[in-house]
Amino acid sequence: MLKLVLAIIRRDLRLALRRRADLVSALFFFIIVVSLFPLGVGPEPELLRKLAPGVLWVAALLATMLSLPRLFADDHRDGTLEQLALTPQPFALVVLGKLLAHWLVSGLPLALLAPVLGLQFGLSGDALWVLCLSLLIGTPALSGIGAIGAALTLGVRGGGVLLSLLVLPLYIPVLIFGAGAVDATLTGLGAQAHLSLLGALALGGVFFAPWPTAAALRIALE
Amino acid sequence: MLEAIDLECVRGDCRLFAGVGFRLDEGELLSVQGQNGSGKTSLLRMLCGLSPAANGEIHWRGTPIARLAEDYRRELCYLGHHNAIKDELTPLENLLASAALADETLSEDDALAALEQLGLGTRADLACRYLSQGQKRRVALARLIHEKRALWILDEPYVALDAAAIALVAGLVGAHLQRGGLAVLTTHQAVDVAASTIRELRLD
Image (cartoon, rainbow over all chains, first blue to last red; front, side, top):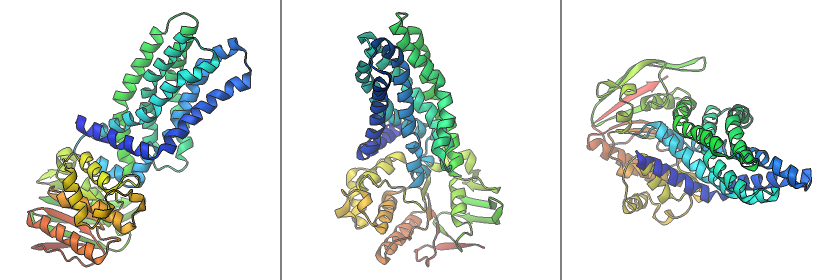
């Protein structure tokens, strides 16, 4: 079972490396959106510090959204999804593999990049560290919830917009606790509680998302 | 082994076929024929368990395939309309990846030998996006060379192939039937597979 998950992760990572443009464009989107804010609102350190958690997290959500429509669409188009649905293992495992691969190429780079961008907002070392940690913990939940939406809108015309409308509201709890963790560090409250809740969301997202996603994909394949 | 009872297929408001039934035993080939849009692909996808039948049942070794689920899929090799190969990967990587995803072990030497047999030996390290349509189909068909599963369901396997490749694929299917396997295929060409029993099913 683990072998199948690893095989899918390996395949998807290899494909992502061959299609570097997709990977890099989402990252650059993140960098540019975040960098526009200090330019737009002016260099006042107090204001920037206050904005930073929300801006970075919202930008991370949007950057994740960018890569979601292609999560299953490519496999659907070239017939690979049919073959994946016919593997002699539970289909949810296949989805889990794809979800983890998606996190490795979208969530993980965002989390690693965020502290560097956070410097523009004058965040303290502690806050930068919590920012990175909150994204590391929170982005798997984004991949999980996003996968359900991507599967539901697979093959639908104008699916990209529909996907955003479907998924973004569901991202709200992740956004609140993620940005809240950084905020709490800035105000000296400590991020423990927020990070724990974020961890719970991520565990729920990663472990419960594959089943509804697999069911939605089977319907899309009919 | 494979038995279909009174199958009905409905697409939208249109009923494509109804009352389709057949029985296929070891070493037998079912050739599904019919015009474009007569429901051949739909029937094959039903037989794979990808889409549900509006009516009727499909049994494998006496048990409904929906109940067997993974046990049925373990004995099934499906080659669809689409090639299911990735343009970014090379033929060799595609072959190894599809074996890994099908939960089979395929060594690199075996994979290379299979590609060699289909005349892709010199293209094994070239990304599939540079291959012609026929060559891509060959990459997809290379899976069959080391395929030991009992039931092959092939949707238009001859599409885009030249005469030599068609003969090769017909030979592969023939050898599979000789081993006691079952095959279901759709084609618009004459079926020249060496099989003891060829059953024909017309969808009209």
